[in-house]
Structure formats: structure tokens, C-alpha cells
Length: 345
Image (cartoon, rainbow, N blue to C red; front, side, top):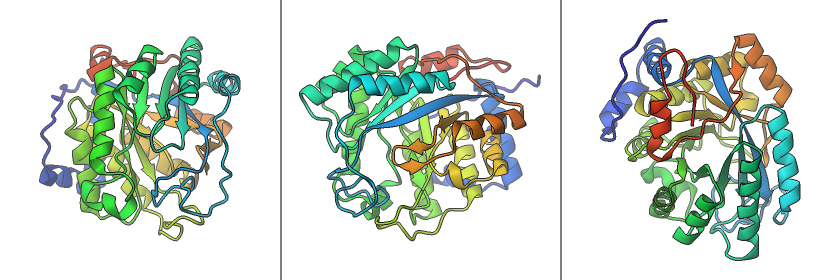
């Protein structure tokens, strides 16, 4: 196997540099991304993840893309927090279907104190007992809450930046960009790995995509997990009639994210249902090494597990059999990586 030099992890990327990467001829972008990818990861493996909405709808935030916002009239039916037992049954099913990471999402602006939060803590403990990575996205956290989740064994906390600081106000007015960054800092302080990415196709410019990548790539350390989503337009939201982004733009974003954040897991997330097998294959070539499995992502459709397995079989790829939980600061990612065989965290 060809050996590639290991690139240094940088945290000082400037917008013109990122723009030049994103604008590369696609064959060159894919070549550079794949060369980096092979240093830190096994190009034939992807991690299977499962995402469950444990509390649905009624969110006070006004995120323009989200059908769970109480500000919009959508088909999403609000539901209270699921029981611990039901959540863990879903986790067991996901585990049996090949997922090694189980993500739990609750439509809150701020994670609540009291009994509901204690239930989530129990869910985290239960998922970890199953031998899976546990990830949560619960809105903003206090430091005490972040510490409690860490003590329960939480692997990762998802809190996306969504878009660039400049475009953010066009999408969300109920939460400041700085508040998102503050929550990420509390997660870091607790010793939990960070899952942080964004969405394309919301009407942002190419420069806004550069701005998002710069915010992600200049975090120190890099987010261990970087989900790249494509907008799934939902009737009733302000972005219901937004034209879908070109799938090759998603490929470019994934390739640029791989080059900028070599050791991170880059997750092919929302929007896959509209993509052909060929488009998804290009995303894997560009450096995506994780997919969300199951027929729903929170409240939006997603390819069924059988289709995912068929696609991976067709590509000669496979799901990772074991979770590889990264230590904070991505040290496990780097220490466990080789050119020939690498795992994810």
C-alpha cells in the first residue's frame, strides 16, 4: 500500500486557504482528501451510527430548517421524553443492525434540570453497557450537566454550528453563535469528545461554507466528529421551498473537511435519501467514514438499513465492527492510526 506523509494538525486556517481548497478541480480535491484520509483511517470502513429522537417537537428555538420548532406548523407530532427502557430497546435493535454509536436527540433549547435530565443520564449509562458509543444532543448545557454526562460515560456531545457566523442570524435568532461555542467549551471541560458540524443548502453562499469550515477547523482540538448535513426541506418551515444543494457541493464540503481536520470522523448525515449510490460513493472517496443508519434522522427520512448494507457491499466496503472511542483531544484517533489500518473515534 502506498505510504503518505502524515500531515500536521493545524488550527490556524485562513479563509483564502480554505476557499482555495474548496474551489479545487474536483479530481484534485478528491485526490488530496483521499491521501489524507488513508493516513488516519481505513478507507474501506465506515462507522454505522443510529440517531433517535428521545423528545420530539415543541422546541422554543426558531431554527429555520427544523420541523421540531414550536414556531412553525409542520407534521411533526410533539412527544415527551421517552422512557429509559424504550430508549435502550431501540439502542439494542440498532446495535443488532450493526451500529456502534447511538445518538440521542431531544428538542430542548436548554437541557432541563431534574428528573428528565436524570433519565437521560440513565440512558447514557445503559447505551454504554451495551458496548456502544453514546452521543447526545440536548441543547445548551451547564457545566454541571456536562460533568454529569461525562461521569455517566458519554462518548460525545453533538452541538452543531450550522453555518458561518455571518449567515447564522438568517437561520436562527433565538440563540447566539457565541452560546453554541460556550456549550462546546463546557463539553471539552468535562472531558467529553465534541461532535460539531453544519448544514449546506440553506441559501448560504460559498463563502459562508468557507466560514463554517474555518470555525470548525480552528477549534483546538478539532471536533472528533464532524457531521456534514444537506438540508432536507420540510413543509411548514421557512426553508420549505429552498432549492436543494448540488450533491457535488456536499462532496466538496466533505473533501475539504477531511483535508482541514484529518483525524476527525467526517459523518455523511442528513440528505442521503435524495442521493444516488454514485453520489454517496463520491462522499466516501472524499473522506466520509461514518453514516447514520435507520429510516429516520430525528424527524426526517433517511435510507433504510438494508439499503445501506447493499450499498456498502456494492462498494466492497464494510461497517466497523467495534466502536473506537476517542480520548479527548483526539489522541486515540492519532495513536491508533496507521496507513493500512485505522479506526475512528
